[in-house]
Image (cartoon, rainbow, N blue to C red; front, side, top):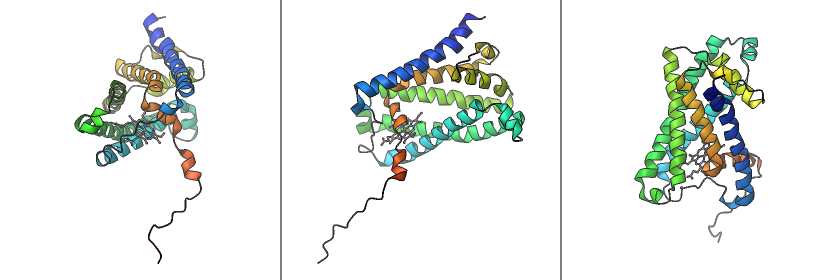
Length: 227
Ligand code: HEM
């Protein structure tokens, strides 16, 4: 078996996932007060609004799409009447919209970070690496979507079973041998981002404030004097 292929699509993904789990645990246990999104809203509220909203909707829907499209076997889609041709078309159109939104939002956020003095002054090298990696992964993913409109590659019977094998601990790197380089670049950079994320502000993803939706109302009183 091709040794480079095994290193890239067997060893590297598990190395990245191990770094991810151990890194998150280590950071949470050793420095819990540093676990946040490093909000810059106080430094510049107006410039943040549009970029942060478009980016978050785009990236969260993109991640859900990856989960639904790749982790659920095509057999299940066939069962509910969605054949692989329809599935692929749907993935391309929806992926283009939500991936495009993520990229547009990220470009706006990066532009804000560079051009607003107060925001730039508090930006670290780690923040730039995070934004750079996100830009790279999302651009490579979107490029594959655009390419997919013109040239078909059967993702559902190659990359999809490979990633399911990684998740279920039954990996088969040979499934990746015939995959075009453009997909490999996207996948490997995404695993690099996963491995790096515990050491960045991306830890905030795992503290999504879902309980907020279910908490009791807070009753506020007006400050005006009654008499
Ligand atoms: C799970 C739900 C998520 C919530 C509730 C959330 C919430 C937040 C909040 C509150 C901020 C700070 C905004 C500010 O400056 O005030 C932020 C920033 C950020 N988030 Fe998220 N986030 C989520 C998911 C994600 C995901 C999935 C990613 C990427 C994979 C991501 C990437 C970022 C980045 C890069 C920033 C910094 C943007 C900048 O300041 O330039 N977030 N997020």
